[in-house]
Image (cartoon, rainbow, N blue to C red; front, side, top):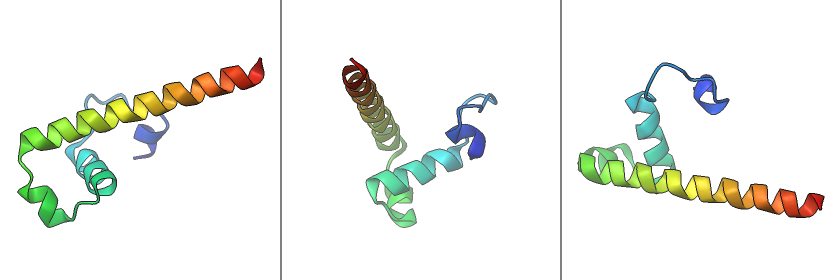
Length: 69
C-alpha cells in the first residue's frame, strides 16, 4: 500500500484488493454491496473516481500556481 500511495509501485496494475478498498471507501459500499456490484460497474466507478481525482489535482495545482504569482 505504501508504494502505491507514494507513487513507487512498479509491479504492473494495482492489486485487486486495492481497487476493492478504494471502491468500498469512496463509494461507501459494504463488502456485501461490493460483491453484488457487477464487474463492469466497478470498472466504471474506478475510472470515474480516477477522473475526479485528476481534476482535483489539476485544480489544486492551478490554485497553487495562481497563488505564487
